[in-house]
Amino acid sequence: MTLQQNDLKDLVDSILEIDSYKSKMGDDKDIVTVAISTITKESAKDLEEFLERGYTFVLDADSTNSEQNDGTYKVFVELERSKKAGEQIMELADGMKNLTGRDDFRFRYYKNFRSLDLTQEALDENIPTSADDYGISVSVNENSINNYKNFFNKSYLESVELRKTTLTLKKKWADPIQFKVVDFGPTQETLDSIKESFNANDFAEIIFLSKYIGDYNITKYGNKLTFENDKHVLVTERIQN
Image (cartoon, rainbow, N blue to C red):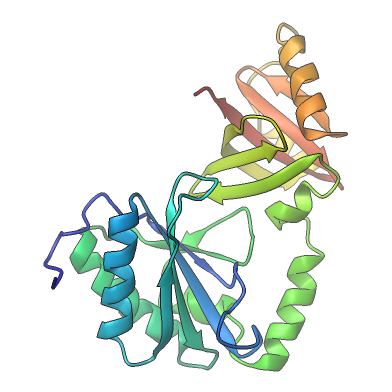
């Protein structure tokens, strides 16, 4: 089936994850991976086929058959790591705009808490375009507390997933819990920006989260929950399912 304009409307997430997953085709230093989240298995398959057949620079495209921990299906696209990578991703996004009707695409590089507007300039600035540059970038990102996986490196968690601003934490043998990411940054600066007052009434929730997540300084201000690690603080709001 040939996809038409808006055939994937409301079915594709706005945030592209770049270099967050390993390449199937070769070494990560030589391949840029782009992961796109969709709402259904069928839309993932449709998008996979569209991207693989429609762009000669796409080395491979694949999609997941089962729902991921964050409730989505993933489409994985692989491109040669080169100076053209940013331009090629913009071309893919342009095609997806036509299919989805959305013009608010953003991207998250590696496993950073923050996503950025999808622009040629931002892509060129953040994506390593050579094997040497990739090696340096991975070394920096793997040791950075801005990496949301690293932030929970002393937790009891089995998995940590970030979709848009929804953080999903999963402990083995327990139901997942979700949070909306509100802010992230150096501890004092970020705490000073919180306007709500200290909440001493939800101590039971703090105890539960400490047992679920692990040894973090967890505090509640109004409806906001803060988690501290290595001189940085993550500000969230609990999503009640």
